[in-house]
Length: 296
Image (cartoon, rainbow, N blue to C red; front, top):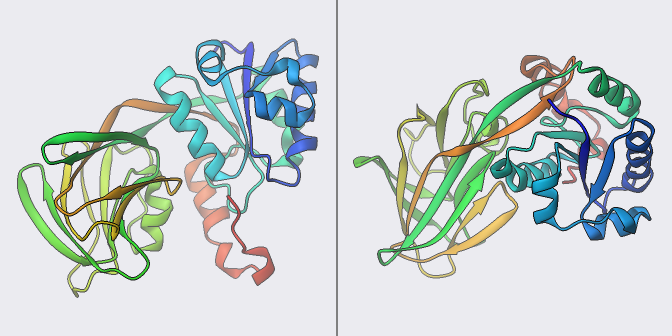
């Protein structure tokens, strides 16, 4: 992997983002790497001369470093996956299940990168399409999940198909369609299975369905999920990785499948999936209450 032009995405709301961001820029310059940031992030760190538009960053960078939590990494992955630029995350959030390094290991992370002590891992993306009265009104990419969900006080019906074959009608709070990567996110909280990220599949998990037999279903990545929404305008929405929200109307059809694009993650020593599963997820519910407030 060529490592010369390093783009940085900074979550400016994180307390440690300013100092660590400036430290990253210093490390880049010390190792003859060229740093660049979005104009707002560059101004925030006090390096306006390193500002560059998003389109320029996509074409210019060999690596993207996200400085924030899993949410920051999800956003960076969706932005840079179509350009094929690898992403590496530094955790300033709570769980940091997808991120590669903790702030206290920043210097060692850089040394590993420079020495080539890292690997490239590809993860699947979802492609979601909304059809309204026969017209496609939106297409979106997601790394973790696409969720058909309700507004605060509504209950909705989601009529689900796998390809052209009817699956079920879920009455409740909605349906999650997740990648294997997203199996440790919202789908897990809703009772879905944990799936190795090496598998190309879709995980369909109903949310609070009013049925005793409603369970998650794992389908092949060669299949597609389709759903019709039964809800009044304003009662249902589609969310992408929990970050982007698109309103749905009665009769809208949602199609979800694996995308052709894939995300490239930089993996450092000690970042193996099962190690992260053992050390990050297992302990999260046993921390003191003040330690479990999630910030994205």
